Length: 373
Ligand code: MG
Image (cartoon, rainbow, N blue to C red; front, side):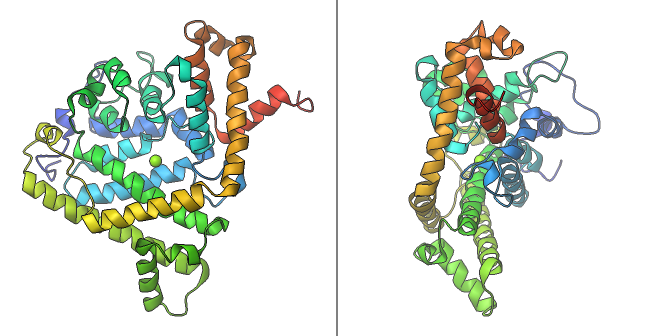
């Protein structure tokens, strides 16, 4: 791939895989990583996992699968404009949420609380655990045996004790080094994707309104633009015309600011990138607007009383499943009972984290409902 910049991650210069495998034919190492992620079980489960809304609440809301596809699309556009490795960004984007529990943040917080005395639960770390250990597809190794650069990108953040236990991929958290620009792009593409689709889903659900959003400049100035171009437009189409303009502004701003950061820092290689401050960034005014939108969503959507009510229920499902299995591992399917002999709490956390929303709900009824035998 000769159109890649010197500061990009070049797949032929990968630090390699934990278990040696020859370079694939017909595709690059990063392409193989992306393909393995798409074929994984955890990837398919993303279809029935949610972020803000629970899966059965409606067919039109984003799931973690469609979210991951949006992150990949946004990330690839940014990467192409900065002469970065599109395939690596795509692989990281498609894998970044693989470790998420059912029921979005409520599920993750509750599982973390359940695991308080057993090493905790971080969804980021869990995504790495899925690709390093939990997928069972290959004869020669556990996990997907991905390249270092893909794993580094998946591990967005991580606590110091966890970083020390992770070896090579955790080192940057101890040495205060940055990941590749591709990882930085995937991270910000994630933000662009969820801020925008949460506005869209939030409006669709009726939990937030156009009136409330009129105080958020990133939204209101793009709404004004859409209205100027299409004075008659209203309803869903007006919202879509607004959201697509917001995404476009954020992507173009990120590309322009990052290009100028790169030009100023002049990294000559991926190793230079690792030693430099983060280079992928929004311009200060757009960063401020983006933060204001995030703040708005936290106040008005993620803490909406109807979301809080659903969170209460879903947290209870996670907690009660965990407690039941922990107190009585014989309730687990045989393959988990074997693993639980080594590390009971972690095995149960892995099992629960792997559940989709509807599977967790079904499992809960199977265990606790007398109507369900
Ligand atoms: Mg995400």
